[in-house]
Every structure is written in structure tokens, then in C-alpha cells.
Length: 159
Image (tube, rainbow, N blue to C red; front, side):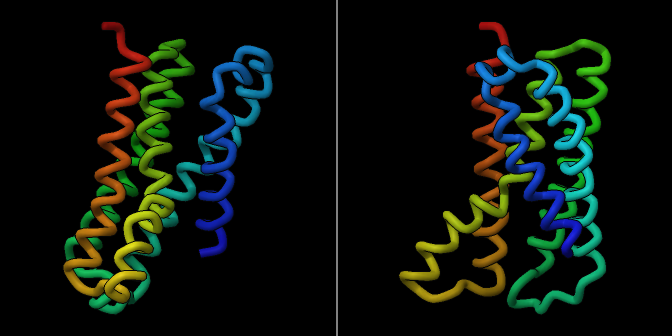
């Protein structure tokens, strides 16, 4: 769990810096160095998330079959997105590199979006449990994925 929190934290902080175009252009070496730290951290965060999902006995009111499945898909998708992104940058396919990193980062930010979704519900009606909680938690990743695709199409792909 400690490894997951540390790697996810580094991925989220360093990843945010990676998206700043001015910083990238002014300090390209810094972008490469932090990318070489952020990418492995993203993979470690995704893989440890998969491991925790599979290995920890989480009570049914906190994780049903829907949330279990979504967590497994998100962990695999995030791992794949980082790997494809790294491969793309090695091959100098920069637009694809950016697109896949946006996808990976959006999935990595799922926990933050879950707080934004669950907090108002919890304050108004108490902590959700069972299928309602699973749907709310899963919707955070879904929302992030949709937003990522919108960003990619709006900013990265030619019109």
C-alpha cells in the first residue's frame, strides 16, 4: 500500500508538470528527466492497485463485483497507456505519446475525482454502500476517461 501511495503521488505531481507546455518548451531536459520518473511511477501505481484489488479482502459494502471489475480494467488500461506512451516517445511519435499520457494521467487521477463525486453525496445522505458506491466510484474513472478523450481531440488531433 505504501508503494502504491508513493508511486501514485509522484505520478500525479510530476505528471501535472509534464502537461505545462511553457515548462516543456523552456526546460525540455527537465521534461525528459521527470518523465523518466513519472512513467515508471505510473506503472507501479497501476500494478500495485491491481495487486491490492486482487489480494485484499475488501468488505462487500465497500467493493462489489462491479467496482472490483472496474478497478481491474482501470489498472490494466493505465499500465497499457503508460507503456504505449513510452513506446511512442521512443519512436518519436510525439502526438501519440501525448495522447496516451493524457489517458494514463486521467485514469491515475480517478481517486481525486472519486472524492469530488462521493463527498457531496456523503455529506447529504451519508456514506453510500454496495452498488450505489460502486457506481459512483466507477463513474469517476468514466468521467476522467471521457474528459481525457475530449482534451485529446480538442488539443492534440488535427481538425
